[in-house]
Length: 171
Image (cartoon, rainbow, N blue to C red; front, top):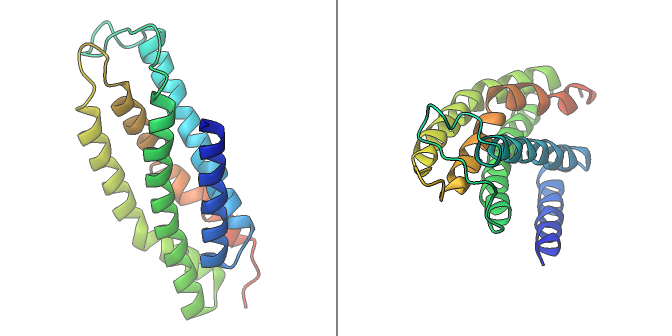
């Protein structure tokens, strides 16, 4: 049932964001970027816990694999959190555009207002959740969530999310 649940979540996100932002492109782009970020985090965790990199000199332990529930739980937690950040950023850009009617200024204003908040929240989330990774490797979920947060910190938020707005015509 996992693919159906993931599909339902993505479809719901696409519909809600389309209604909120009055756009079809922005919700699709948000889902794609968040999916890449989630896949990168899962790759990092496989690299560490399944293949044993970084386990020799840290508290992390080679587990040989991931628990079958890990990707499902992480999808729900991390995808929801990253979509929350996306909605926060997109809504600020949208509000700034409604106020100024200048697309470039709205992008700068939106990223400027939300950038520090999103980055600090993601860094705080990383610090708190990475603490859940234990010596026995039972808490790979915490590692996935924390690495997912790191993979989409300032670069993805600053550049990738603002690019569709920059191609929109200024009115």
